Image (cartoon, rainbow over all chains, first blue to last red; front, side):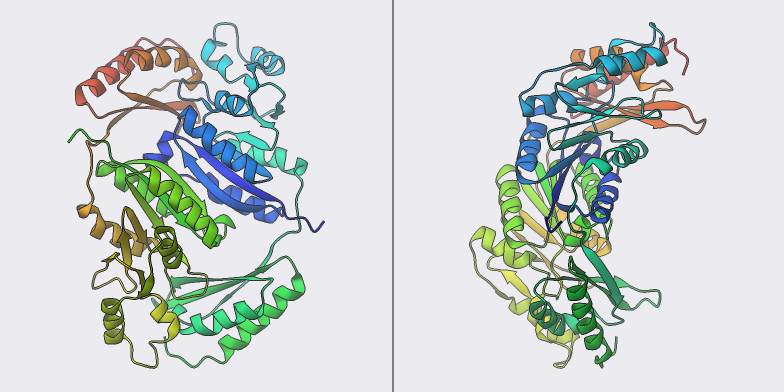
Length: 245
Length: 245
């Protein structure tokens, strides 16, 4: 269980790049993966363009244990994710009989048109990600998990797929409010970071409720003792500060 | 003025990948670039890791007209963006005399410590992005624009740098609420998309106030006449629909 498990996210959609839709999936998946012991290493956002999707997907899936994609699995002509994923893997794609059967239960012959049947196109060899409440399924092929772009549906798909993923030792995290300006603690904080090499120490400035510059310090480590040691050093440093803000 | 100008965004920060901080910069920059006639083609998010930053930056700056980075230009040990950018360009980096002079005006000798001076490190040959209200400057080197991660500061930097950028013919956009389920219009919409090749037609499902599945259709084009023609075809198609939702 000392293994480190890594992941990338690939967000697919013109609407994110045009700014028309503000992405809400990256933050959700990032937090979700951290909580289940998977390290998110990289995110890419690309357009609804087959070559761009394939290039980004291949880069990410060769580099990380898992890749999570969002967007582009609906019924319209701009939904090209499933076909692009099949091409990236060099496998065929066709209407999945189980999905078609479910669609037939839900829609009459008049409504089960070609556009809706498009949502049943699943690359050969992929496992479906579906539930009673998910209409158009996501799927997992190799180390790639293909999900919807609509946040509520994506979130339901994460809940289905997460228990099946291998996960590593969870990255633990503790934070403290410095009540100091970032520039006043940068020096001592660097010394602590150097003295505690198996931890990651982050410094995040913000403006607090009193309109004063303030800083959150976050210590992360997979080892609880090392995390505690580094956090103690941070708190000791903060207690010894003698600076006005 | 018929040139197409492209851009990428590189978001730098462990805190985004851990999910601790939810990015608000991608959506802002995306919309900003669309409005000034620059096409955002790709976004990447990477950790505070020199090799990762350099690899992503080089990929993006070789591919697009501009790259906008956010994050990692503060006073602490995890702020390594300026040094990484200098390495990516193969240039030196040092305390910029103009920035140091400004810092001396603001801080006394006791407060102008090594950490704060770190924010004056600017790659050789870069132009500063600064104003009276921006403390630590951003900078532009080659086609790369390096900005703060704090949204309010990043936004002030965009306002400073934007007038200096070349921009292309603006992508125009019009949208219509379909009052139809995406699956009912996917077929005719595809036909319209094929008949109007110089437009981009996007279909975005949502749940409306009556809890019914609904769809926003967006037509984009640089040519106003082609946009109008495609939008007319979309509206005609919608008017002829005879489906229950």
